[in-house]
Length: 134
Image (cartoon, rainbow, N blue to C red; front, top):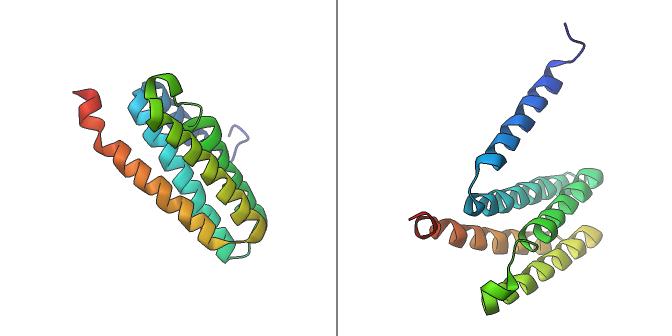
């Protein structure tokens, strides 16, 4: 009717839903969403690596690196966060390096290592939600 196919409409609806979620989310929830996005991208990269789908693997790993470096890392307040923020900053750098290595060398172990680190950080961040809100 309007010259668009169903998948395009579904994709547009999903983008609006994501945008609405981001706009209404607390700062704490936004960080959780960043962790979730990076983990989802790395899950996609893992499957792509197993299927020898190099373009998808590269795109997904790049997306995860972007989330880590331009989302999680830049959200750190080194002055207010002190040593913890400094350590997270270094850890995010390390994760980006491991992902780059994993991408260049098809090293599944490097990707899994970062998935484990991100999963632990996400779990810890989620656990403090009640303290942040209450």
